[in-house]
Image 1 (cartoon, helix red, strand yellow):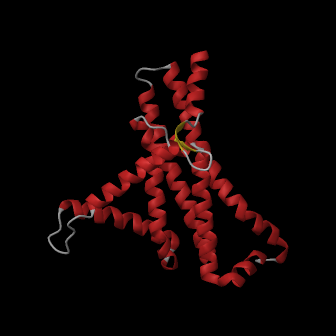
Image 2 (cartoon, rainbow, N blue to C red):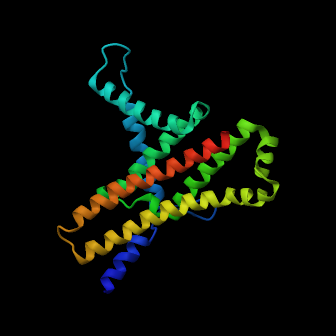
Image 3 (cartoon, rainbow, N blue to C red):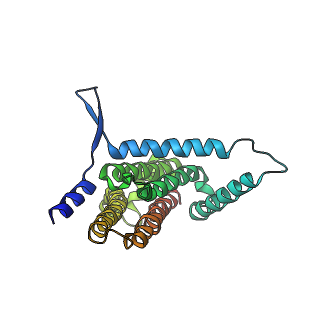
Amino acid sequence: MEHLVESLMEELDCKTVFTIPLFGGIDVLESVVVTWIIMAVIMIVSLIMVRNLKVRNISGRQAAVESAFSFVYNFFLDLLGEEGKAYIPYMITVMVYLLISNMIGLLGFKPPTKDLNVTASLAVMSIVLVEAAGIRKKGVKGWIRGFAEPLPAVAPINVLEIFIRPLSLCMRLFGNIMGATVVMALIKNLLPLIVPLPFSGYFDIFDGAIQAYVFVFLTSLYIKEAIE
């Protein structure tokens, strides 16, 4: 039992990898280091995939990349519409990061998204983008006036939504990834041989993909609502 508790506490703990000797010491958590690794992988793979692109007689690699990009781009275009095209690159970037982050446990790393700081940062970034999109579309006066729609009486609720939305995005993503991590730790300790494999496939792949989809889907809907 003690071993199980120690294992769970190890999964829940956000370890400090190293400390930057500035301003009294800045702790760099494991989730930050893993995020740096993911960023490096995304940049390297992106550079490799876009090398030697052609207009005619394209390679099979280029055809596959263009097909995958077109599918994802059209998915977000359907959600955001023509007026939201400028926000599609951000949504694709967040989706790719979340997919890798949620599934990186298969490689022995701890998912960064099980750190509340990471999910909170993503949620705040997304909501700032949503509100900025509304201001860009309607202007400051139109954005402020929108809080009183459809009735002035609902203005406090609409203002409160600015804080509720990032909290919802943050806790939904964090809770699901953390819950999956805890369940997998329990399964690995109680049934350590063959049984964890199918559960790992579900929690790390299926559930991770679903949570990435939900996050970007809701953010896209919020942007669409803001620019209508």
